[in-house]
Image (tube, rainbow, N blue to C red; front, top):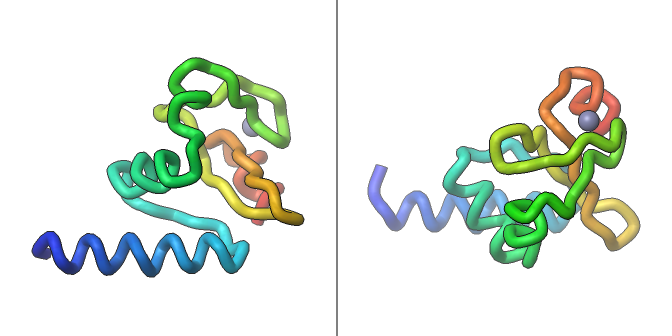
Length: 86
Ligand SMILES: [Zn+2]
């Protein structure tokens, strides 16, 4: 896959996210998405907790994110939290 395709895929992922669907992306794309949402620093500095269980989330244990009523919901990678946010 070339860079053009990756960029295009990322655009598609982003537009899906904006339409409030849960996103499953490759790690690198996830990081780009978090940067574009201005969440990356909060995440790296431990200021973001799982919306479901309250566990602190970092890049290694992020389960996913979704948009809900205009704000971004982030949840961890526990099975329970991912299925709660489907
Ligand atoms: Zn959780």
